[in-house]
Length: 402
Image (cartoon, rainbow, N blue to C red; front, side, top):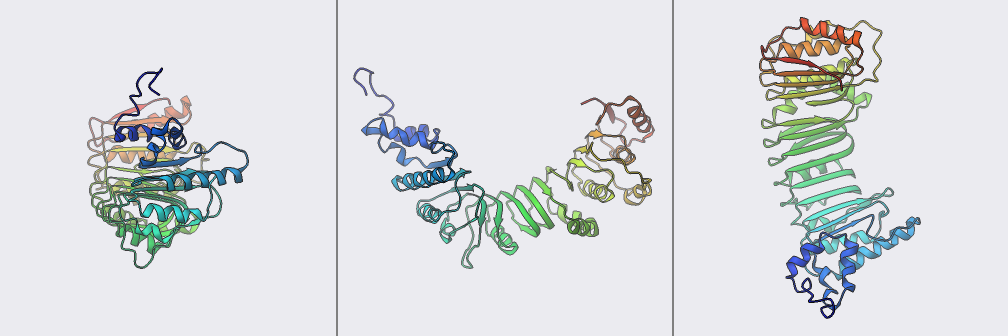
């Protein structure tokens, strides 16, 4: 390579630098460097990060052909490898459950694996082999569409800092036990779980993401938690359950997170600081929002987005609700910024604005973005807002278009 073309400076670089270059390439291209020269034949074999995505083998419309190619390629790469493997990631939509997965994970358990990501395509769930529970150096574990059943002898992942379980078949007791046996866990994500009552004990947890049908959530030992994201899917049974216990449940839920900085919810039944698709015709949902706000003493910023698709109720709004549920002595002592979008001027929207203005002594800005810029309707809303008492003399109400 260094005759007519000049000296081969790259091949003579330290192996650590070459590895840092190769690891930036797609795994297929990294392996193909073996054909450059005899010097390069096995340079790829010591890279410590292996990522197999949809582009790791040539494209084909025949799914079975692609799946066989992916299995063969991964197996070949693993067994030609030299040295430890710090990251092994499969995010391949064509690959489904196959017997080779057991061999791969067994191999990884013997090679100091630190990060394991398994996201296979649609199809039969694969069962996690027992060899995974011998991966004592794991710092990150992402699993999708699998069966996860830790053995009774499992003592936990003592180095694990990030755990992500998506559509994983695992018993509630096993989830709680797994979490409690990961003493360094900082980030936890659980998605697509059904009718789950969950108690979380994780003294080093900082970030929590929950998505699914959760019947109850208890944060028992999470003093360092700073960010929570919750996306709850509500069945009628779960909605009734929360309606019955929401008062004590929110105090219990939020009381154990004194350092919480951000609380975000994504859909339907919103227990959040950033509230999306709020139904202001649903009294249960409004009650939950009030419980959340009044149980958040450190709240500084609140964003609420209404649902512009919700029809106005023909029934007379129960305005006595606000006198019964809004405690006169409740104060949002740190709330400074409120942003309300997709507002239609409905009576309960006006009432929550009145509540926020009247109970936020340090409020600086309350901005309102209507769902439709209708001059007559917006004028009525402005007239109502002018009448509102304000706890903060500095509070500025801004009415804008989107």
